[in-house]
Length: 124
Image (cartoon, rainbow, N blue to C red):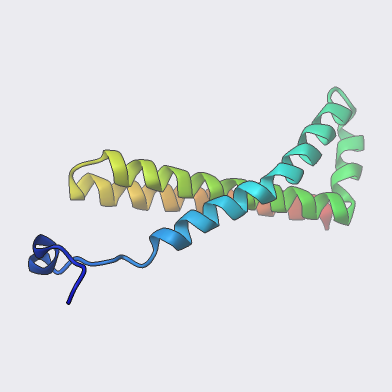
């Protein structure tokens, strides 16, 4: 006995087996972003209006560089997961949906790579 609906059997669509994983990835990144965001807000408040050299020295510290990289990576990944859900839920046509999903991934990875290179150039 199958738990699929008759329409699902005809279309060959069943459980995607990725909904729970997607849900947990979004929750884990949200939890990771709580302390990282607090650190980021503290560092921005502390160095607002500070000379350029002071900010470079701050980001050259390995702990601060790692925290900045984690903040950027977790934030972008969390954003990509959220935008993916919005696209999947609200874009009805398959062509534009696929295009937007690819743009979402490309933009997230591109911005992440640019930010990682910038932080690593300062830190090294």
